[in-house]
Image (cartoon, rainbow, N blue to C red; front, side, top):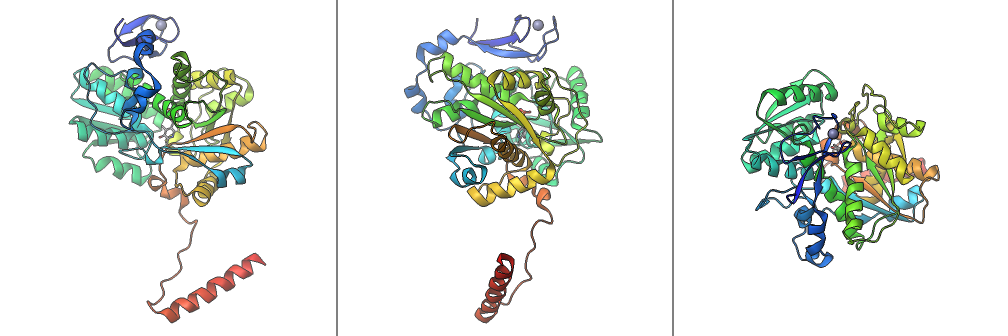
Length: 417
Ligand SMILES: *Cc1c(COP(=O)(O)O)cnc(C)c1O
Ligand SMILES: [Zn+2]
């Protein structure tokens, strides 16, 4: 076999390397598999540590064409301890993987797009495309501009304004669709059959999805080549959570970390919770839902990897929870006030879910737990509209400020009494 190739997740048939996501024999999804013996022979912790701090340091475990030279330093976002948030949640060893500052477009989607575009080039596409709940749109548009692809982006028409503008600014063709993400996605599958375009999350999906593994590789390396006890991951299509699990499994298989049980916890918004609902009901299959939540980046009612996400969570001894929109907004504020990290709605879902999991005793305070913050709050400021008043302006005079200060102190004292 070549260094890597596509293999059917169910029947095991191999398909070489081509822009295809489904097995024609059994209609199951394809996944990239590697020649792990070849990787084991030369990939060591020391080798990795000598490379630049970006996601390409794990190139042997990514489906990258021969002689591919990445042009952007994507990934290697901070893993920070979160003692203040931990105090609020009743957690002693809490860490945050902060992809709110992933480059170039401030969400973890930059990782998947980087790998997808590497393959789009080698498959000979000059146009790339995607269906998106927002962040993927931003990332495809930006990286297509950088790499010289034409880009066609399909979104539900009512996405957040910052995510729409943050796609258009890169010169991509933006096609708003009067429908839900699931309808947009179905349309894209049909377009992909008609046009020779590289749809990053349709015909390039197996390659795209591998990019998410780098979140897991980085967490293990940043913990000193150790796996955490628990990880809390927001779920839309359910791909990220399954790929973090694949990353941890690969590191164990290659002898780069010691094997240990890791519990996987999935987070959704209650208004779009097909995966968490199934987990809580003890079902192995989900029922599709019609999304109704402000967590637009997670609003996928028919998650492509939902089945595998449920399996990863339940097999690990983990759990899934969901939070109402009001709770996710409070959680955005809590994370910002305690740790100085401004996340988007998806991050509010993750923090709110973590709070529930500690309350329910499903995560023990002493264990090392990582929360995956996957996107940036500046893209979803609508979620906080009306949460803060701005005082009317004062004159640029010390007396004016002193009087302002007196009022502020008085108000505060009244509040505190
Ligand atoms: C897409 C997205 C997710 C979920 O990704 P899946 O792999 O589809 O489950 C989580 N957070 C943010 C901010 C996203 O944009
Ligand atoms: Zn098959």
